[in-house]
Image (cartoon, rainbow over all chains, first blue to last red; front, side, top):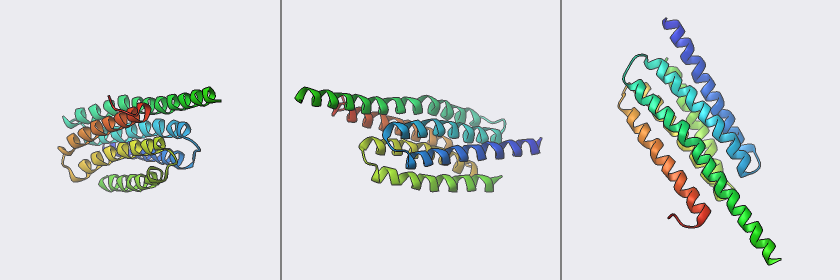
Amino acid sequence: MEIIQTLLVVILLLGGVFFFSVGTLGLLRLPDVFTRLHATTKSDTLGTGLILLAAMVYLGIDIVVIKVFLILMFIWITNPTAAHIISKAVYDKEILEKKERSEDA
Amino acid sequence: MINLFIGASIILTLLSFASLYRAIVGPTVADQVVAINMISTKITVIIILVALILGEKNYVDVALIYAMVSFITTISVAKYLERGKLF
């Protein structure tokens, strides 16, 4: 039982760190705001999920697991929302500027 | 298993510093907001890992509050970016 728990924690932790690395690579290498959002949001959310799942498996049966699960749910709701709002702000601003430029011409 | 958590938190810290490059240099303000959002997600995870490493289970509450504050920060900066004012 102990071995299964350890193995599960190791696999989930390694997966989480891997996805965080991929997200950071995307943030540093991709060319503009939308592609960077595309890279970071998904890999960040998945990496958080995996690492917090590892924490939950490590803690076992405990009241703290509920708190960790609450944080996990909160991040799963807020991270995509934040990405959506940032991309909407940038997109609307670009559209507005384009319209103003075409009216000037 | 504690060593594993320590290693993971060290790697996450290094990745946070790597994304700090985009937060400082980033050509537009939106890039910087994306980078800061990513860093704050990582910090939340690091706080939980620290809680596991030290065995202080109360620190998990800190992570919850940190996640809430960073969400409000991101939302308000994005709104400011969009309209030029907050309300």
